Image (cartoon, rainbow, N blue to C red; front, side, top):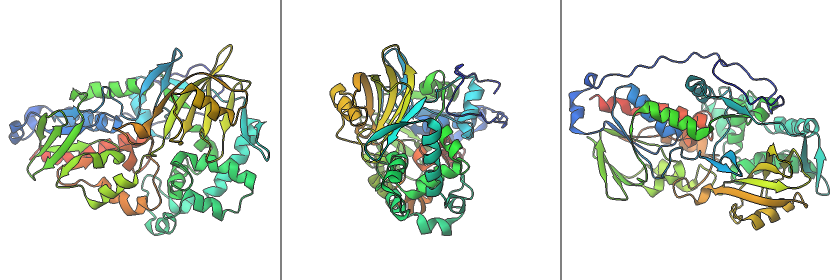
Length: 469
């Protein structure tokens, strides 16, 4: 990794860093005079709605084609469902955070930008369910046994996803299992009570609960990790040293697009010749085409004319992003030490990951799907943590409720049963002069920054030809 450096910590969650050998593509920015003269009737060739990774990637790719791009972002910041902030004097990520060399787009981006990496430390021990509550295990024992259970859970992955980058490659086989929820698969395995506790949190918690999440979504991630438990565990190890916002800003700078923050979109009208976007503040912009780069859950909050396709309306109503997803950073005073905490499906805090040890406490990051939990309320969070760690004292907490965010309406994407075979192909396609870009509809790493970049590149390609007519 010629352009990356690690934090110097000798022990990481990923034992071996796989080299990425893909060479950086040569980028050429076309001169505006090379495009059609008919473009001059508008100030912009393409309007991108949303400045998350999908939107800024699309904007940069369009700029490289010589097109003039306007980005309209509802928030007062860029990044979408990634957001670098501070807590207790530490840089923290309130949304997406980890990257991996298997995620080739984002990894190459980090290398191209010369951004360093931080490798989060491995835990010294784990706290997992027991027959009578919770107990401590070595990482080798806990992840070894859980890895065996995950391998059993995902035994169909090689047949269902023979090519993980093309999820429909085995469509006939996929249709046989895409209607199953994670709970359906757990029930079919005939697990002991304890084994199910060890497995359900690792599978159901990610999708907003075992009943909500699709079995095939987890199989897809497993396939992208080469059907391998060690690689699956390793994908949440590395993060950009300057934060996700820093990486996003580097891409945005290259895009050289006009950016309007605090500009939530009210309506998008495609009359067949051009597309007009109106903001809630009453501003109106027209271009030859538009990239809608907001989460699927938000699509139904925008007025489209003609209206959204049935499949898109259904996708937005059913949700792709986990509606109750919350992330929280905690400073804990407890006997835990450098311990990874795993809870079964249904606990108010489903995972606690150690990040940094202080003299009198530790910094941890946690995740929750419990909409009743106020992740910014110290007392509520302390009660939730004490269900697992009775001596826990929460000194400070900072959380983000992504389901309550009006411009996200959910967190990371995790498809529901039937959505892959019933919706994905249709909602990846353009609708007239409008294309859609979001990690939610990626063919590969849906739910990760990698998926957002993939989707942004596809949407930019889809709308380009309209600007040169």
